[in-house]
Image (cartoon, rainbow, N blue to C red; front, side, top):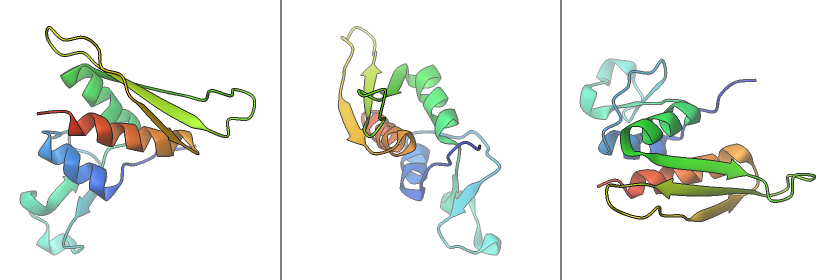
Length: 114
């Protein structure tokens, strides 16, 4: 069992929002290591590392669960964004697997960062 790595699109968005933790996996938009530069290299963390970064840096909490604990045919993500002097913000995102829903939740959480 291994942690799921984030997608290229999520890695690009994470870099735009300030994610700068060095990871053992990266994306290079040129596809050739010799052409890799800081501008075209995107760290590729696990979903759980990016989730932790969002929680610790921006106080954004993602919760993934299955409404039907017996079949687990559907998964839902709720995230709560606690900014200074604002109320928590909730949203729901659905999908067929825990990892799929977590990825969608990570993207939505990154999008709300200014």
